[in-house]
Image 1 (tube, rainbow, N blue to C red):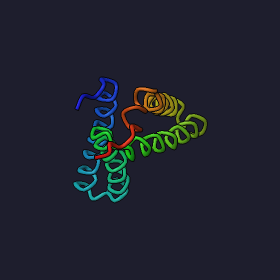
Image 2 (cartoon, rainbow, N blue to C red):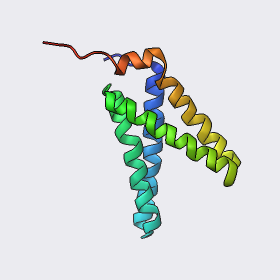
Image 3 (cartoon, rainbow, N blue to C red):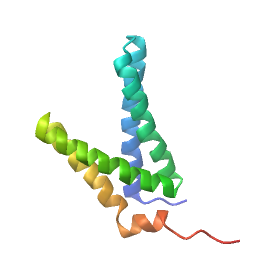
Length: 118
């Protein structure tokens, strides 16, 4: 299985964010902070499962990552306008780049290829 460098970078980014959420989960368990545990569990699932699916070239992972990133763009816009402009810009740029990469013709070819018939 040969994956393009851009896809490996994307998978690495998703795993890095999932790892950060894992550390936050450990910290939440250590400090008995339930306000950290649930969001970090959600973050681990939201980033690690699509990363695994993208690595395995699964169509569901491609679709789910586009949906997740689209929601993140909307949240980034809200964050930009209402909460923290720097964090909002970072979220907008990062997830817009993810969507742009996944919508490229070469990326679509990896995930939307017809199933081989036996």
